[in-house]
Image 1 (cartoon, rainbow, N blue to C red):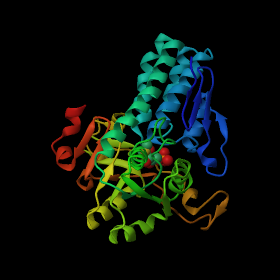
Image 2: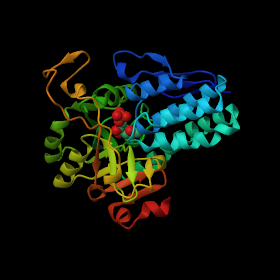
Image 3: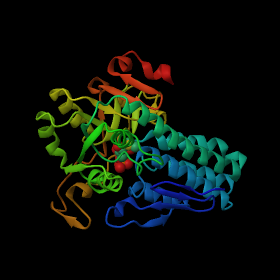
Image 4: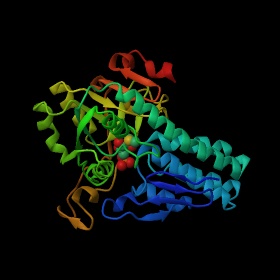
Length: 335
Ligand SMILES: CSC[C@@H](O)[C@@H](O)C(=O)COP(=O)(O)O
C-alpha cells in the first residue's frame, strides 16, 4: 500500500507513528502508535488529540494490531478499551463501532476500513472548508479557541481548516488565537500550525478575548466541536461556552465547525453529552512547575457545552445550518 501520512500520523499498513503533540512546539518527536494499549495512553495524555484525529488514530492502531496477528477476542478487547479512552468526542466511538463490525472479517478488512476512515476525514475537512469559507467577507479578523487544525484531524482541519482556506482566498487577514487553558492547545499547537502556514496571528490568554470582541476587532469566531447533539448544542474545549456568550453580547458571529462524524443524533441535547473531567494537577501547574499549592482543590472539566441558541450557524461537511435550522431540527433531517 501507499503510506498514508498527515501532519500528525504516519501509517504504512504495518506501522503507525504519531507526532507527540505534548512536546510541540519545542520538539517534533514521533512515537509508536501501533499497540492499542500504548495508543490508549497516547490518547489519554493528549499526545494524540482532537476529535476526528483520535478516531482515525484508534482505527489505524486496531488495523496494525490485526496485521500483527491478534485474534478476534484480543481485537474486541482492544477496540473496547480504545473506544473508552476519552468520553466526550463521539468520533472515537463512531470510528471504533465501524471497526468492531469488521473484526470478524479479519486484518485486510480492518485495514481497509481504517484507511477509508482516514480518507473520508480528509474529504470531510475540505467540504467543511468550502462551506465555511462562503460565510466570510473579504479580509476578516477571526478568533479561534483550542486547536482544530491539521493536528486535530488528518486533513486541513475543522474550524482552523476553514480559517486556513479562507486566508488562502484573501478572506482572512489576521487570526487571534486563544491560548486555551489549561493545556494550551492554542498557544502550543494552533500558533505553531499558523506559523508554518505563514498566516498572520496573535496569541492571547483566554480572558483577553472579551476586550477584542468589545472593541470590534474580531469579525467572527470559529471553533471546532467534540460532539454535536441533535438539537445543535455542542461540546468543545472548555472556554468555548464563555466565548459564545461574549460573542452574543457583542454581536459577533459565532460558528462551530464539525464533520458529520461529530454529530450524535442519539444525544437529543447538550445535557446528555458526557464531559471528561481531568486531573486537578493540570490546573495547578504544568510541565513539572506548579503555581498553586499541591493540595489546592481545582475544577478541571476538559470541555463545556454551548447551547445552540448561541450559535450563529453550524458548519458541517453537509452544509451550513443556521440557528433557525437547528431549532427546526435540521440535523435529524440531514442525517
Ligand atoms: C477538530 S476540532 C474539535 C475539537 O476536538 C477541539 O476543538 C478540541 O476541543 C480538542 O480538545 P483536546 O482535549 O485537545 O482533544
